[in-house]
Amino acid sequence: MAAPTTTDQEVSGLRAGLTNYGDPDFALFLRKAFIKGAGYSDDALDRRIVGILDTQSGYNPCHANVPQLLEAVKRGVMLQGALPVTFPTISLHESFSYPTSMFLRNLMSMDTEEMIKAAPMDAVILIGGCDKTVPAELMGAISADLPAIQLVVGPMVTGSHRGVRVGACTDCRGYWAKYRAGEIDIEEIGNVGNELVPSSGTCGVMGTASTMACITEALGIAPLGSACPPANGSQRLRVAELTGKLAAKPLLRPTEIITRKSFENAITVLQAIGGSTNAVVHLLAIAGRVPGLDLTLDDFDRIGRKTPLLVDLKPSGVNYMEDFYKAGGVPVLLKQLAPLLHLDSVTITGRTLGEELAMLPTPFDQSIVRPLSDPLVPNSSLVVLQGNLAPSGCILKQSAMSASLKHHRGKAVVFKDADDMLARIDDPNLEVEPGSVLVLQNIGPVGHPGMPEAGYLPIPKKLARHGVKDMLRISDGRMSGTASGAVILHVSPEAAVGGPLAVVESGDEIALDVQTRSLQLCIPDSELERRLVAWKAANPTGTGRKRPERGYRQLYHDRVVQADKGADFDFLRSADK
Ligand code: FES
Ligand code: MG
Image 1 (tube, rainbow, N blue to C red):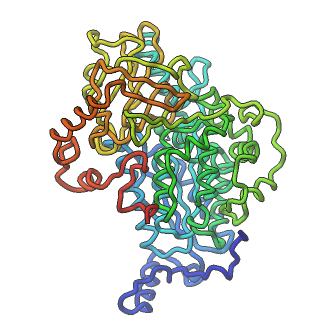
Image 2 (image 1 turned 60 degrees about the vertical axis):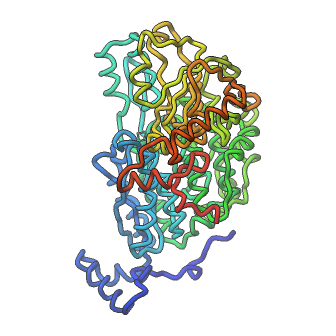
Image 3 (image 1 turned 45 degrees about the vertical axis):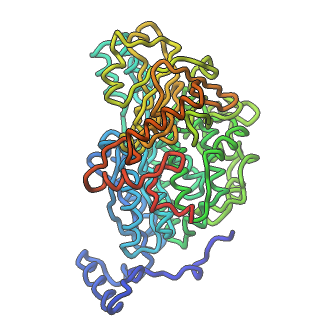
């Protein structure tokens, strides 16, 4: 597809989205009169307007560089003769979003969609980064379908603890596990805490934020080379300036860029980077906003089978985002992956992915991004499992788990919810052994609500102290993209709506076979049916949760769809229409 020309898109400026009731000339007059109160001249106002979505917040340290990004973005917009106008939306940080940032993702997407529609602008720049912000912005921007471009805040750099490089947040978990096992003391864990987050920006490993940043390049909605430059470096500001320049020119709409082909490219990248399990839910939700686009869990497994893991970053590998950046970042990866990609997908520049890649220099030799001929893992870093325990599927990051657990059968130790797990996991009398399967119920979209990242159950203290590092764990929740282990997630349907996970009992045997993608509860069909009927009788309203009395919590409880559809709200999805 050719890039749009200036004649393709009329400049709307302040006229964009003018009220369709009353006197539109008067409405325009009022708009101008009010915005002139901020000191604008007619010359500034009579031109293309680029809205810039500003997600800085005192509660979002990952976005602490947004003020500098705004300055650079505005410079880029003005260098091309358009007018930049910033506006705020909700901002979500992982550690400051009670009950979970995932619970608030859909709210942020609604805020984003409606604010884009509410104010006059010809295009919008979405500034995001911390885990749920980019998915929320893409979901909202697709639904608004105004020309849009993504700018991520960039990853943080690494710190140093006693001569060892550390970074959020794989190392947060590693050091905390050492502390739980009694290997380090309270003073040392405090010292590590000073070094894990040494700058602004998003977690410096291949967690959810980095994964989604890489995916924005693969989808074509962000400029090539924009995902990896560190948040506090000069290249990050040049990326911001470039983003502003691109947005000031006529731009394609999200639904012209984000197609089935670009999603398949995104899934290829997700598998090749050993990306976050959370990205699966987010991509399903983002795709769900595109009219007529039917992306399913099967697509992830099908593409995974032919896609090797090429990027050596924690938690699947050993390096950090700043190393990926120095190795050339996503463009180098896309060059390696080219035989597996749809190169005719159109990108934000109006050029195809193939045309963009052809403009790049030949990659230099390095060890962070492997060639297709020498992968870290030959295929399927993320797998989709099916079986009587998860009729609508569940996922497992097999690139970051103990190989010995890939074919495993063990007795379930069941926790009925997150509180039960907290109360009993470290009980010295808990009946658990290294081969047990830890099962956590009721942390799904409806169950908790908002699918907390509690699916990464800690190893019971009494086993951790004896050197047990990994166990098979199963839940309907999520885990942080920075975590690793034999952790089966997103079991659908979830326990709180009467999925089979709800009726697993301690002592039941569970069998996993990654090779055949199978997860089975080893009880007779008749017994499973009997338990499910009993669950329904005990929960006549269809959910095991008390319906919240009011507000967003009630809306969420009533309208959230299951994880295999992205945990969006049913009324926001367009894919089925
Ligand atoms: Fe913001 Fe990890 S907490 S990206
Ligand atoms: Mg995270």
